[in-house]
Length: 268
Picture 1 (cartoon, rainbow, N blue to C red):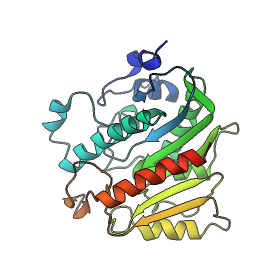
Picture 2 (cartoon, helix red, strand yellow):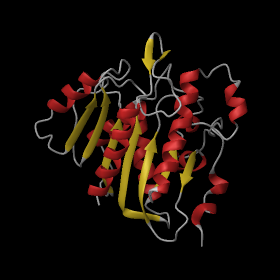
Picture 3 (cartoon, helix red, strand yellow):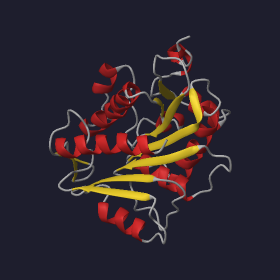
Picture 4 (cartoon, one colour):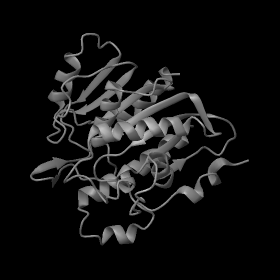
């Protein structure tokens, strides 16, 4: 049996609006993209949380002409699905949760979804994923970018599900400015851009330094890398976000991809 068809009916476009009567799990089920290897079996699984721009829909033409989406938004929205495909090719199941659509939003950059709310989504997504036939329920991991990475940090700090099966977490240029303290209950890989003027790397480094026992955290800061340094197709520098910048840097992108794969391999 191929599991790729298992969730097809559950995948909606990014502009879907949740019913007020839906449970959090219903919202996740109706607003996610599933990337599942074609082989049979149970796979190491990543619950993926995007940044504030959201996730691209299947209708790229409509997105291109949407005045609410800037060039930076379009680049980020495509990026998360591109990375999910790459991780699938490496043998992972990826459940990419469209938290913006679940909240009835197109993007959340002007008014970010708070970390506590993202943590609620993570708790429920982990519980739901653990019940799926193609998920190794003892081998679930988290990955989050920017706003989503900040939500992963909030989830790590708790409260978490008592029976959580999450083994490790990756946060890529996370927003650490909303955190005053941090709990590290499992291995964490934190990837930062040295020239990031959106998610300031020094804030994250100081946050990690404030944790009395932080040996479980691996922090990598890529010199000269901007926010979105791993986005294929982005220019080296693009003005956005009220005078701040994003930009692709191939050296940092290649190194961080290898760092993610090595980290996840060690987390077996």
